[in-house]
Length: 327
Ligand code: XMP
Image 1 (cartoon, protein in one colour):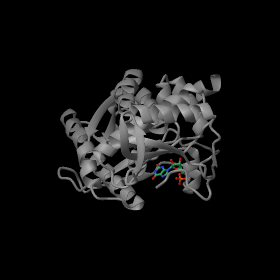
Image 2: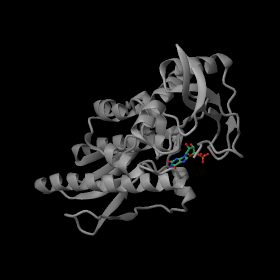
Image 3: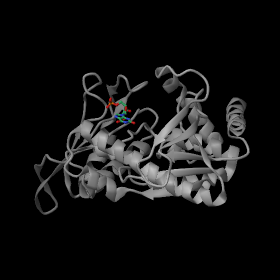
């Protein structure tokens, strides 16, 4: 629509004014819609002076890293630096089972990886004489209101524990989504031609699949969960329920085993929980009454196609008392 075109153009122009004719900007991509749209706007404003960083922590769902590395780049032409931190995250998560501890570890590793990527980008930029001066963030209007943030430009300091950079590097924040609500962000994303899988992605937590494995996170468990989750998402999409369902975490009860019969004999596998919910804002949620046929297809396919899983259960708890995620 005209209005959305105007919003996109207006934000692009504002970013152009804020950043000016020199200096570089850096933007972390998460796989979600906010950072993708923010990056696309800044890319339109300053082109190759924007450097996007994608930290692959190995906790995304099937196909999501490719959506960023291949589809998003193809759609926007952004300058992307991929930082493969999968091994580092797994090593840091070894033996960690407490949910808050997992979040802490993942958050800490994420900052480390992002800063290491920054060093790379800065190092390359030093050769060209450009200085990184701007950090792009996908802050939305509700986040601004919630944090009581006023208008204007804020600066943040990035604390580097890695060599080769000043201790406190100051970035000016670029927040092109600061005045927008989520639905407007999606429309701007469509307007800018971003991949539909990114634009319409349901909410997905920053710590990713790490908090959907109940128990320690390992490569094997991630692999099991990723395959089961992909099937559940395919069937939800096939049933045309993607927009009706707010989100549907798929959870692996990795430390629980139960007996089953699959194929030729007795199995001793893991249960999967599907947690479809409807919600307006994630503060409260109702368990979703998925059609029986959809539940059946999910259950049959997961137990047929993911050998390690021999039981599929549905979470019928609303929030409160249950949170949407299991951890
Ligand atoms: P809960 O589980 O608290 O989740 O009902 C509410 C919403 O927040 C998401 N969520 C997170 N998002 N980092 C995030 O970025 C987190 O640590 C986190 N934990 C939960 C959850 O997916 C739901 O949309």
